[in-house]
Amino acid sequence: MSQTVLEINELTKQLNRKNIVHNASFQMKKGEILGLLGPNGAGKTTTIRMIVGLIKKTSGKVYINGRDLDEEGLACKSEIGAIVENPAFYDHMSGYKNLEQYARMAKNTISKKRVDEVVELVKLTGAIHDKVKKYSLGMKQRLGVAQAILHEPALLILDEPTNGLDPKGIRDLRDYLKQLADNGISTLVSSHLLSEMQLMCDRVVIMEKGKIINISNIHEEEEAEGAAGQLVALRVADSHIGLAEEAIAGFKEVTLSQRENGSVLLLKMPHDVLPELNRRLVQAGVDVFGLESRRSTLEDKFLALTSEKSDELQKEAT
Amino acid sequence: MLPLLKNEWIKLWNKKQTWIFAAAIVVLMIAITAVYYSFIEETTVPQGQNWEIALETEIAEQEEILANEDEEWVRESAEQKIEENEALLAAGVDPNITNNMTFMNETLLVATSFITLFSVIAASSIVSFEIDNGTMKHLLIRPFERWQFLLAKFLTVVGFSAALFVLLGIVNLILGTLFFGAGSPSTPVMEMNFDGNNLYTTIDKVLPQKAGLYFLNLLMFIIISFSISILFKSQTLAVGIGIFILFATSISQAFTALLGETAWYKYVFLPHMDLPAYVVREELLPGVGLGFSVGVLAVYALVFIGASTVYFQKRDLA
Ligand SMILES: Nc1ncnc2c1ncn2[C@@H]1O[C@H](COP(=O)(O)OP(=O)(O)OP(=O)(O)O)[C@@H](O)[C@H]1O
Ligand SMILES: [Mg+2]
Image (cartoon, rainbow over all chains, first blue to last red; front, top):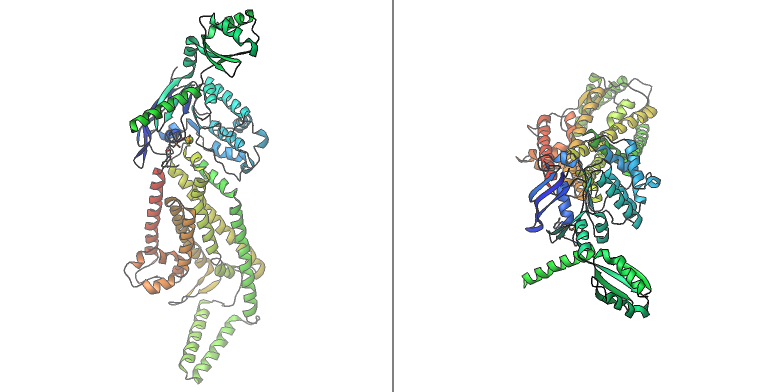
């Protein structure tokens, strides 16, 4: 069941004697959505370009469904659908004619019905016969997604697909990728929208300066966090701060970690005592205006990791 | 391979430029017809008398001059005229006959430098346009070898040039028939040769030769511009060099006069870019016949195609 769809092994790209990507390795399982994160210039696009064969790798291996990209390049490529950086089109042709071009290049025959279905899916039905030069950025991005999924690839590679999409578009894309994942299709997606990646991905790979510095499983971490204790923001009426603090002080599982702008208290506690805390506050006569859990975000983690790394690098330098 | 060809052909004809080129060929042919028509009107000798009698009368006149004149240059010109008229009579060539066939024989190659120009532009842009436009990466991630894309593009340009040539032929035939009436394809004609004996032949023998030899040269123009645009990643440079060669060929006679003596000149491709000259002459330079010329061009073609294909197979596509 847990078949490996993509494996990269010690992938390295050297240009002008500089390692743009250095010994990158990771695997992707069938049906998995893997996020590729990293600051600008980290080497995400370069890694993707090597996987899809747009640039030659300096060393390392890429396997797609167990096939070696160097040996069975065409077989590998027919299983991939991709957006690499900004999707580009033949502007003087309609969106539909553009898609027809890609449909013809697929190894399997793509019916007109399939094209219409994909157009429907990316919500371009109304504009598909307009010339692409009239499209907005987001519409082009949608057409980009359409050309990537048209031939039903086993592995989707999307380099910043959320670029230019409106919130609705991002949500649609997320839902669609989840739906594809349920059907066993894997997606490698790079993005700068960390909150989006947190919602979308099963695992994330964090790159910096050409190296992979962290690979983590988002769901496992969320569960771990839930057990150990998470941050909860409590908002009460201004005059009830004292009362609230008293109630909390008498609850040993809960610790007060910070006061935020007057009437908000940041508390640290295990996830499952939240209802009990609420009950006690009400019993103590505190007017509660809000009680919300604040999960530590991928952003916190990302910034911590990348700044840690740059601190280290700075130390190394001195 | 076939889908790639189909794609390229569709993309080509979805460009405005392609239609403008085709229209330009039609307009140009109309202009040539107009000029030719007014020229014929002015110079045509009064019809009604038998052309053979006219030629004989002219011979008699010249003989009279020969009998009475001592001036060297007058005698020479009279002798030449007599010789020419006798040859015309012997070959059965009516020098004043004008019909759609003689019209085509005399004007078909006039407009071809425009076909060459348009082909150079198309060949230079078909690869570089996709790279600049960003669509090349969408092609190269498909399950085809890179050389297959090059081949499809190359054949498309050749097809385009052939289409323009056929269009020129058809327009030429229509206009010729309208203005000069239908004539026999086996109409005898004289082909002028400035460096030797004139050629007396028929149109159905000489015109296909001219067209075929022109097309070989056209192929060479396409190969050079296509390859340069790939090797130097520059459309501008490729068009520039193509046009330069086009002009250089039109004055290649001057180069030949200047450099024809040197040992290496026959290995330069330039003098061989005027192949239709072989219709009237055996040799371009001493010892350089049609076979040699085609051989030299073939070697250049292989080097250009080989270098650009190898380079394109290996290059990183950013
Ligand atoms: N053709 C090239 N020649 C030299 N350096 C290059 C080339 N292409 C990329 N680089 C360098 O490689 C590094 C990684 O670039 P890459 O595009 O992979 O980053 P990225 O992680 O995708 O960044 P972003 O988030 O901005 O898209 C950058 O420092 C870039 O300057
Ligand atoms: Mg990038």
